[in-house]
Length: 239
Image (cartoon, rainbow, N blue to C red; front, side, top):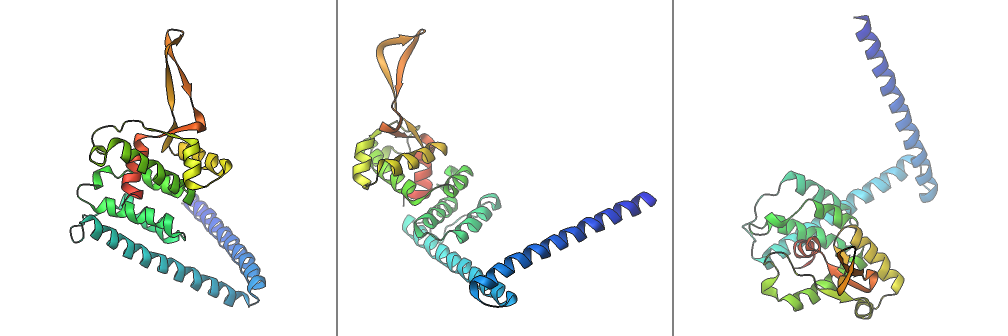
């Protein structure tokens, strides 16, 4: 019995410490907002809280409108299937925090794909993590490469088995998007990190090293969409 009393006392002390810590943090943040806004602490916190709530609500409304618009365009309006909470909850939470329309549209398209009877099977939980790590320039590069990919393989062949690797030249991408090499390389690094892009690897015919065919990794100079990248664009970028 004495052991239970001791454990209860410890738990009470820890809860009290947490409460004090939380109060200290609130006072610190409240004091900062008060100075910034020139209002009393309670008023400053209330102003920020109301603004954040309104912004999140506004973004949720836009998300709903966009998903409905995409569903209508895709022909699944009124035939949507339920989305697993494992996917739906993080999609809704992240979409409501996204302030950029281009990036929020990725969440809307992913939600629409998850609601489609024939597209839901292609939606992977990894897509959620990928969207969270993208910037607008990353999306523009993916769009540009996918357009070239479709031209190369044909619209009808996009979903036929494992996509063939189609390479894209760095100079052409820079010209098409009017971006600097630094912006390009930063974006490519990020898209490679999330496994949407990879460098073209060219096998050198007639040359071998240790019995294996020699190959050259072209780095930033020549890129390919990965299989995951193609599926991601279809589910989250392409309408």
